[in-house]
Image 1 (tube, rainbow over the protein chains, first blue to last red):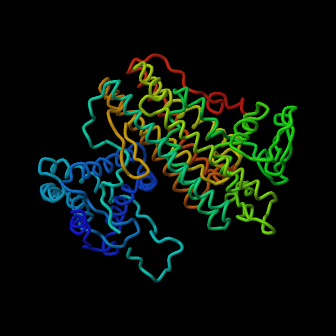
Image 2: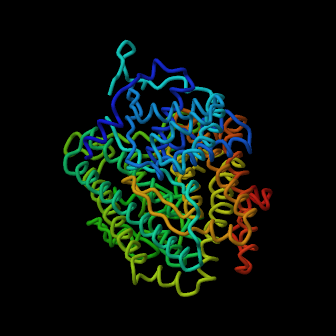
Image 3: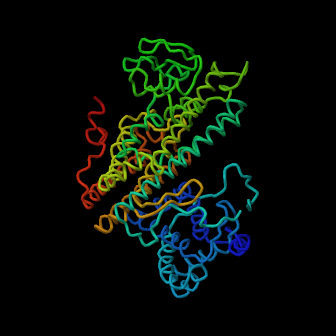
Length: 159
Length: 419
């Protein structure tokens, strides 16, 4: 079961470089947030550097609420890739498209996408939240680089 | 590499409908989180001991770096436990053994000439136990031929009644791994060579065997001290029993810990004082240049006690009915305000942590005239002070009586700092 879940939720469907910068940053923040406090500090820093108080706190809270909602209400364990992985998994892509669609104002479509993760009873609320997260995420200044200083400059690190 | 999202959950319960909270349930959550934090601290200290044993038994540059990494990892859960110190007498009475700071490191080992010598305040500031197998302490001859945990905690720690004679705990170990940070306000941490633990002709700094013995003894003592504290929070342990004995007093203990750590201890003594004095020695993890993490995880510990949710080092979450839910039931506005303030503090702390990890270290921030550094630190200080005001509102909302939070001259009477 675990391998099946990993295969289904983690299947590579895109690469970060093919995404818009704010989209790639959102995927990275999703991964970082799931890494625990050290990763969350980097997510919080994004909000702190982009928004003034108290909006920074509100946006950060919306992001955390979306993350905890997705995890709490998901019908199966969701799968993410490692922070530095260039691939985008299918679960990550669903979350990205959920946020993107909701932020574009297509809440009904976003709610349908949300049902790929959670039960229909929660889909509408998740879509609303995703819309707020998306509007904020589009304004976040993308991280300058994800390449570690020791990485060779002409090699793309896949995993 | 693929991972399930749920295996490394974050810290909050913001999405969930808050569990109905009564005082007893909130206290249970608080005690369960204490047990988890001290258990994680013990686990990481045991890993540190393994790394230290490897360093001492088979010294190498790699072994020293591994021990340093283990020390840094050990600070993550421990700092989140500091919110338990104030308000829980058992923790406060014990804390000085494991996290006393600042220290006169010349008591332990060799120091640079710029460090100076003995002072009127501390006759033993350069005692250098590593180099001396016998010495006189408070008029009595001490046999230090064998460096043992008993020697460190019995004869040396707070020797002559001087608090800065810190012979045990995280910071003594930190000094033995990193050495003095001689970079002042410049970049860089302490740079003790691994050869300080080498044997024979390769030994630098002298007395490498005794230095290794000291490091082992201090780390073994840290492990045993943490084992003791874990036991205090298990079912039937004294700390848990005292907390649960009186529900209102227990809730007061939680708020006392949050307020005192926020205000007097962290915002005042550990942060604002350094800004006032512009002294690179006024940083909590000064040898390792880990102060930004020390402050970050302290603040995170305050937040996760309030929200009733702690993410363990293995990614699992310990959570339950929270103080936040209890306050919300009494006054939702106060809870929203305090939660917002705690989040604002984490944003400020995150900025400071990120800047430090990008190369703008905490001692650089402390340099006089460094406006960006002062802004980063004071942003966090002001947020901590601000959240303390909201903690006071929570105290009033819950009607648990008057609570006196720890103060600090740095905040309450800055002129006194310079007298």
